[in-house]
Image (tube, rainbow, N blue to C red; front, side, top):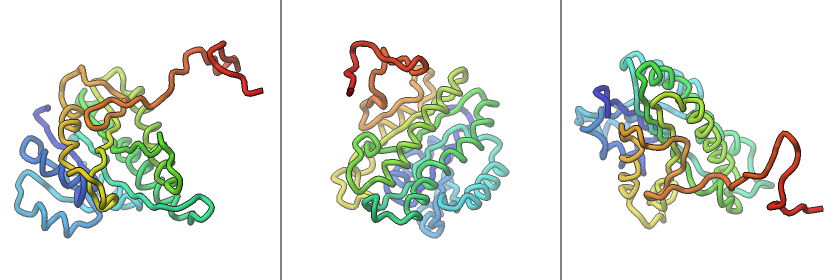
Length: 246
C-alpha cells in the first residue's frame, strides 16, 4: 500500500461492499459510497477511518457530483473498488427497456466513468489498484439474467481494455467475483461476504507482480477468453483447429 492509502468503495452500504469497507478500514482510509447515505452514517458514523459519500450509480449526474466532492477533498485516490451493482431477473422478451438501461448504467457505464475520472490521478502517482466487481454470469449466460450478464460482460471488456491501456504504469485493473455470498442481491447465498477478503487483499497489494486485466474468484484466476490462436481476424481465416460450420 502507498502512503496515500485512500480507497473508494461503491455500494458500501451492504453485502460485499460493506464487508470490504469494514475489513479495509484502518489499513486504508475508506471512502464508503452508496445511495443509502443514512445507512452509511449509521454504520460508519463513529469510525475515523471511514468517510461516507452519497452516490447513485443509476444517475450519471450523481456520479459526477460525488466525484467532484471526492476529488476536492482528496488530491489522489489510488485505490478503487467498483462494487455497486444491480440484478433484475427477466426473460429478454418480457424485459422492460428501463431494466436493461439501468443495469448497463449501474454495472458498467458508471464504473467506467469513475475509472475515467480517477485514472489520471493514478497515472500522476505512478501507482493505482482497481477492482471491478463482476460475476460468472456473463460467462455462463443463465436464462432470465440477460440484463445482468450483458452489463457485467460490458464491465469485463472495459476492465481488460483499461488494463491494457495502463500496461506501462504500475496500475493494476482487475475483475473480481466475490463468490456465492449472501447479499441483498443474493439473499440465499451460502457464504459470508468475508470470503472475498483474501482475493481483494491480493489485488490491492502494492506488489508489482500482481497481474492486470484478469478475472479472480475465490482465490482462483478464471479465464475470460478462449484460446483463439490460429484465428486471423483481419485476414478472415482460421487454421485447421477450427471446424467450419458450412
